[in-house]
Each structure stands twice: as C-alpha cells, then as structure tokens.
Image 1 (cartoon, helix red, strand yellow):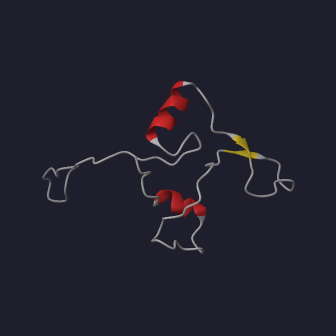
Image 2 (image 1 turned 90 degrees about the vertical axis):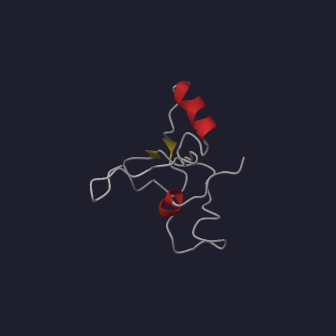
Length: 90
C-alpha cells in the first residue's frame, strides 16, 4: 500500500472472514469451492412469482445480529450487515 506521500505503509492482516452463499467461515467456503459447489439456488427471502428470475446466490443462515452494535439497526438492509459482520468466534 502506498501512502499519499509516496511512502509504503505497513499492512497487517490479522485474520480472514467471509460471508458468502458458500459459507460464512473460511473453512466451509474453501471446502465448498474445492468441491466445485455452487451457492446459487431458489430465492427464499421473498415471493418471486412476479419475477422471471427465481434463483439467486443468497447467504443462508445469516441474520445480521451483532452488526452495527449489540442491538443492530432494524432499518439497515441485510446487504449492509453482511459488509459489517463481525468474524465468527472460533
């Protein structure tokens, strides 16, 4: 990473986290990727009868709890919570 003044900045990676249709932890995601699995399936979060497309890559089992503080924010879309989710505890 290069700073605005042209000097290199130190970058420290302290862990990995993932929220994806293939899994919400690195180990599960990697196993499913190696197995060639797809995260695409029928849409389950809303009624799709009015739409031509009825499949998507939904993140299953993700509630968004713990995002944006202990109570969360009920007005925040689930998509936003996937971007600010805390890493799973080991």
